[in-house]
Length: 395
Image 1 (tube, rainbow, N blue to C red):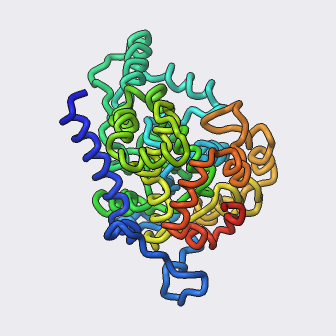
Image 2: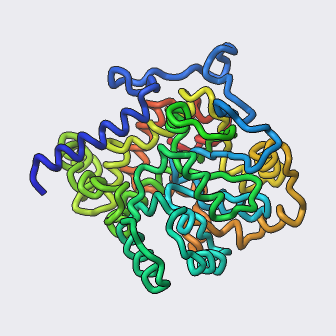
C-alpha cells in the first residue's frame, strides 16, 4: 500500500476516535485530568442517571400508541448480541443488534428457521431501501433473491444506517409488524445517539440506556476483535483501514515499540502483539469507554455482568425500556437464565469469557503493564467505582 494511502487511513481513524472523545477531558493537552473522587460534590460527574433518558420526538405520537422505541447504546465488546437476543425472546419485543439489516441483525442462535422463512417470503425489495454493509452479504442476498425470482433494482449498499435511526426502526417494524416495542443494541455510541437524534429525530420518543462492561475482559475482547477483522470482516465497509492500521502501528509508535522490545522482549512480528499495541495507542479503547461514562451525563449506564446474574436487574431493564408496560413473567426470565442461553451470543458454543481477575492473570507481563499504565492515566478505579468493578488485583 502506498505510504500516502496509509497515512490517509491513519488520519481518518484518528479523526473518528477524536470525534468520539470530543467532549471528554481525557485527551486535552495529551495529559488526562483525573475525575473527582467518590466524595465529589453533587454537581460532579458522579451525579449519573439511574433511570433511562427519554429523547422526545418533536411531534411524538400519543404515548399509548405502538410501536414504541428504545435504544441500548454501546461502544461494543460488551455482550451486545446476548442482550439483544435476550430482549428479543419476549413476544412483544423486537430487538436487533448492530448496524446490519434485520435479515442479518435479527439472526440469533434460536431463530434461524424464522429468519430463513422471512427471507423466502420476500417478493418485494421496497422495504429493503438500505441494504447491507458487507460486500459478502450483498452478494449472498443478490444470489438468494435471484433464485427466488425477486426483481433486483438496487445494489443493496447500506449507507450509514447509524445516522438513520428512524429508517432502522421502520426496517424492524417491517420485519415484525406485530411488535409493540422495537429497539436495537449497539447501533451507535451514546454520544452519537444524542447527535443523530438531534439531527434527524424519530417520529416516536426513544428510551436510551448505555451498556458497559468491566474494562479488563472488554480490553481482551477488543484485542481479539482487532485480530479477527482481517479474517472475518475484510470486505466490510465499516472496518476498512483497521488491518492496515494494526500493521502500521509498529512504525507509527516506533519509539514505544522499541522500548517494549527492550524491556519485555516482545516480538512484534506476532499479530497479537501488534493488535495489543493498536488497542492501547491507536484505537484508545479504554479512553473511549471511560470517557463516555465521565462525559455523557444523559446516559444511564447498565452493566452486562449484573444483567447476566441478577434476574431482578434484568427485569428492571425490560420494564424501563418498555415504559413500565412489560413486567417480565417467570417463564420468560427462566429462558434468559438457563445456562444454555447464558453461554449464547455472537460466539455461540465458545462459552462465557473468563472474569477480570482470571483474564488479568492470563495476560503477559507486558500486557499487564500496559493495562496498569492506562488504569492510572485514566483513573479507571474511580471511573468504574459506581458500578462495583474490582481492580484490587491489578498490581
